[in-house]
Image 1 (cartoon, rainbow, N blue to C red):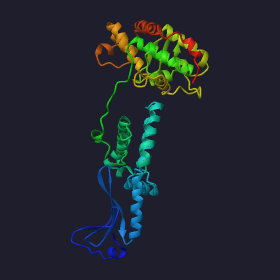
Image 2 (image 1 turned 135 degrees about the vertical axis):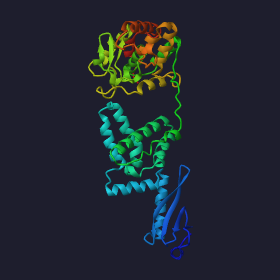
Image 3 (image 1 turned 180 degrees about the vertical axis):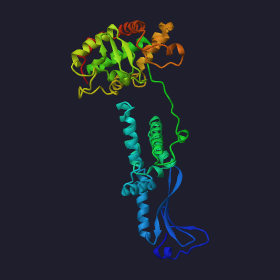
Image 4 (image 1 turned 45 degrees about the vertical axis):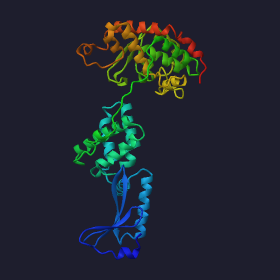
Length: 400
């Protein structure tokens, strides 16, 4: 270990050299006699150097304190170099720090995003990016800094989220370049070094006896009547779970359900012909929630929709985790009805609001072929209703 006297006695040489103290701390002596305190550490397997300051302005004791503070940052999963830049930028009131530029980017794009998407983008930046890079000037951010952020998300088994965050950072830097704040996009070429996204099929029961048993099991467990009615409506209509949870009474027009484009995954308005059984569900449901804006409101606030997790939890409690999920009813409908009506595959795709690449399917208008789709959905409703009973008895189920 070094002492004040040994540091003072260090002489310059023809080439720079280092003398180690302890715990990664060392002093670097330059040919011109300058002495610089440095702390070496590793992040993600890569060696980094944290510059503490020159000697004698920074004493040995002060250098050791700075080393210990840097180690504390590392224990908190923070890079001390990035923390130093954050503090420096915050102290200087830098206007082109990442978070400030990010707020400008969010404001510029909010008008063309749905409120839900805008909220998701802001949420991911506030959770993952601003705490680590928010105060760093955009021109000082490097690819390894961004990689450290997205890798930390990957380590939490959130691979898809890490890629979404990277894409948002990349777009943010495109905005910064356009406004002359930097001439480099450090996120541009990082996709190839991230873990690949593995798409897994959603679990689904694709035989009628299994669906009959599912509804019997679900209805034997305590649940809110509106939750059970939502599952029934989801199965009957073949739409996505989020479209059911956010359904509004104002969207119901007689025997059709008109879902506006902003609530659809593909951003195209979708018309759902309602079977007799689906209308029966609505008749019972109206007694429960008819005065609320949503068909299936939150149990805590009728002015908010049911949580997207509610239906999944209901199935999981009945023992169907990994066997059948709310989205699985779409696979059930597709598999069973395509086997019964192989000639009507294009209409079934319309029912599911899928995007098709072939020219024939692309020619269909979603607002048309109502009767063809109605016939398929009615046959489907007749099939699954044989084994699950009438919806009215669901309001007598003891709520959890």
